[in-house]
Amino acid sequence: MTGLVYVLNGPNLNLLGTREPDIYGHDTLDDIAGRLEDRARELGLEIDMRQSNHEGHLVDWLHEAQAQGAKAVLLNAGAFTHSSIALYDAIKAVRTPVIEVHLSNPHTREEFRHHSFVGRAAKGTIAGFGATSYMLALEAAARF
Image (cartoon, rainbow, N blue to C red; front, side, top):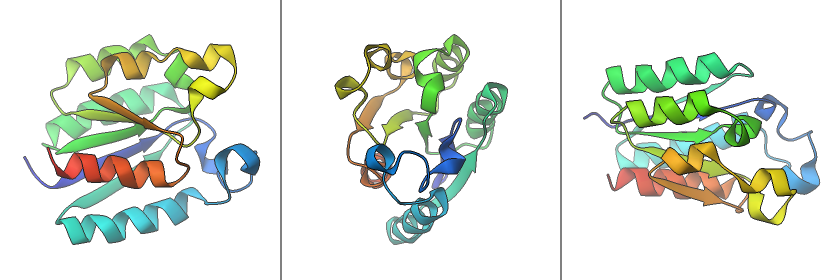
């Protein structure tokens, strides 16, 4: 395994910083990427951060992470968390450990957000700490 960690982000996460900042905070995805890259270097890791509003891209990138021998995948699937059996199947199909990441705590929000297909397949979940959720997930991935 290499020190490569994929950080995959799903729908609407390109709008971070402006979308419902009372829930998701003021950090943009670029802000988060910069902090992750800095910490990854300190840990001897490399980050490959991507975002798509299309479910199939996330599935393809999970497959690619395994093919590239990635150490781990940090996955914030956005709304696909609660609806995507395709992501569930893809996570189950790859050997690369996946850590589910959420900025907010889905269990304190609307009822439909309490169910996670991603979480049922992921190695673990980190949620509710805003942008710090990504950093905590990276720290966990470094220990694999």
